[in-house]
Image (cartoon, rainbow, N blue to C red; front, top):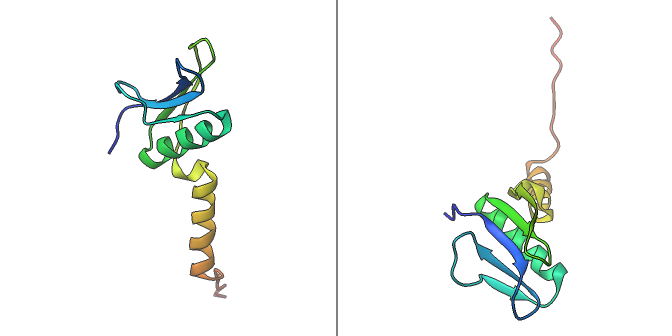
Length: 95
């Protein structure tokens, strides 16, 4: 399991990169800000680690713990599990 933070920052040659906290190489590099954001959130959610976002100047602008439940993928998984389980039946018992 990955225990380091995932950093999402501008790449020196243009575009955006996603890398581990102490990583020497980028995990992925993207020309689109939107695609890079999605990939960074996905990686952070898979490993349950913090996502640290840097602005164009390299300054940290936010950090947040990302879990599977906070992503669209996690919400879809919860809906599928609930659908498989069927309707919840609660019985009232009169005493």
